[in-house]
Amino acid sequence: MNNKIAAVILGAGKGTRMKSDLPKVMMPVKGKSMIKRIIDTLEDLKADEIVTVISPDGEIVKKEVAPYKTCVQDQQLGTGHAVNCARELLKGFDGTVLVIFGDTPLITKETFLRSAQKVHEGFAVVVLGFKPQDAARYGRLKMNGNELEKIVEYKDATDDERAIDFCNSGCMAFNGKYLFEILAKIKHNNAAGEYYLTDAVEIARKMGLKCTAIEGKPEEVASANTREELALLESYLEKR
Image (cartoon, rainbow, N blue to C red; front, side, top):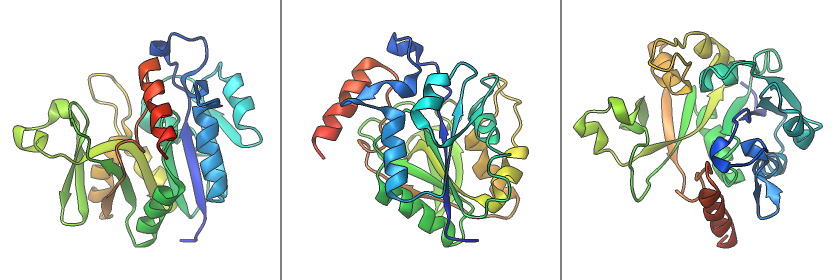
């Protein structure tokens, strides 16, 4: 594989809990939209490709991320489906592909580069984890040494797994050579009928590929679904 880095930003969310007409990723954090903050970080690390997944009525997001490419997720069928919408735009890409949620704007360049480094070391999937003060209902990262065995959703976790304090932030990095092959194997036989990106770890391992996780700070991987959480992001930024 080569040293190139691409990013897929998931920006199709409606953001109904924000009580705003704006798409969620357009909500401002200290005067700049969440998605623009992510783009700025990716420009800083000199990403070779940036693709944003938008909803059919996401014209405002398309303008915000210009001149970078966008693709449309016609139906919200889950995170795995959203990333797969970028398949044509990233066809043949043989570097690291970062998958970033558009409502997590504070992840640093250094953390993205650490993820890419792990891909270079031979891991096909790298998950960005964190250790929150209250693990609550986050998915758990089940490690075995330096390898990630699986991501366990809270509702499916045993008591032992719920005792794990290493949690899934949602952000992942993939070896581009395998990304879309992995996505093609994700099934939607779950209660929501959605394609979950978190299934990628188990699928990659069944393909004989290695997965791992790196740790980020809780305030770095924080996301915003409500205005209260937006205010929290602003307070984290002020402390930098």
